[in-house]
Length: 346
Image (cartoon, rainbow, N blue to C red):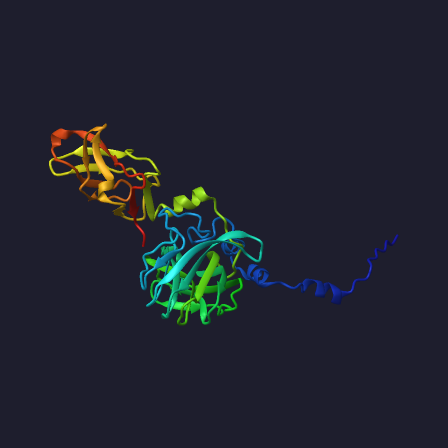
């Protein structure tokens, strides 16, 4: 007995055309990836943004907004990890609450030139690690500016390069991206992410940016929001601050008497810093060494006595020094706005 099996005819041409589906930039990159790790990076699994405080929510320094930045002064932080300045002219930096065209309510950093200069220069430093060598990184951000010849720029530890397309200078928000291959042989030091750099500026020229991101791979992925507690912990690797927080005569640490100085071991609340930190404070007279409310001595000088990225030790002069004085409290005097800070920024 013969059994015959038949199948409906198919249109081979149609089946082949079904395989030729349109694919965007991200899809093409996924198909072209040669390893699972490349695909992992492309879809942004895990932590992606190599920038810290990208949503500008952490401001340990308490910098008021707006802040005037003197010409060529590259040490002003409108918020943690972000600096900005202009060449040959003052500028004004503001942190703003903005609503982007995608509907997200975020913070932006705006730098406005006060006069004529060679450039406006917002930036963040990024520590270099050996695994970054030869990797492709992609910059992205929402950008708003009113002057021409501006684009992303990277300083890779060797040289600086403008990358990607020029930003539209129409004063409207635009989502911009650019990619760059990091040089081989990167081991130590730092590089810089510049969300805008280029031609000369005149008074009232500005660059404003929001949601900046620097990530591995050739494709920009959606902006990574992090919780404030996590962002603060990342910032404290570079800067930590003790603040009187409106209270006077409160304690910071224990002062141990020696014949040369009071030594104050500090336990940093945010843990180990990037390197041995430098010390700064509101005013030396804001601090005291005291035995309860008696035997109180105002601090007359203060410095780092022993450097350590986890437990810096202060050397404090206050009253007469003698090892027989034992242990006392080191803390704030009558000032309610005093502060003590440790800085390990790049």
